[in-house]
Image (cartoon, rainbow, N blue to C red; front, side, top):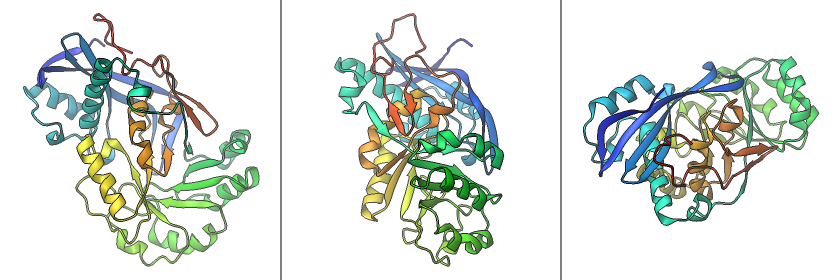
Length: 335
């Protein structure tokens, strides 16, 4: 689909977009749904001879969808303040497109401008799968020392036993994505202490924070859906938070969240959506504020951009030739 040029103006930048659907290698299942493609908006910010790019990924959990976002872009004539845009994922994408231009003007590549390393360690996610599917991934699991496993209430202990059998030293994050009941959590929490679990991420539905106070365990809890822009978090319940730019938006909001974490001594896991390298690369500028990374979102894509980031075991490898932060040819709008 061709780029749709709109009349949206932000500080003399012309904002446009293209719809792109990235196919996944296989279905990605969590407690509230399954996806085989990732629908995105390729956001462009153009000014004079410079064109910056960002990726907007719809966040359905917070009632964001591409239809509403594109409608906003079409109807809005002028954007005066990025932080006032209703869609937080659009805020993040536009911020990244503008940063792209800023890096281009500096004549540095994105690695040196943002002071990034060429390699980062990250947790690798195993979506919800059957026992048989977990067994098939035995050789992959054996090579990982940081594993994030998506789990609903089905086969939790059986799956953890398999992972422990294949790799007893691996550090594990359990991500329930709000898929557990309080009864299930309380019943199984002592059994879960027998595994090498760093924390349990968002076991209960957002808003049920008080119930976690009734769960006595040495395993910390991590807020994901409970950790959201302008929402109150119970800092006595959670020891970790999953910081995703798509649910906070622009730099102003992100750094406000980081300051709150520092104030209340919360550990930050820097997270992402299932998304392309165009999302993951800019996110890494926040890595220095985080204790661990969960940035394997591009690993699941069948079709990523040219010179994409690469994954090997628990490591992300950045490619200096990736076109974000590089001057684009006038006639070329993609990466």
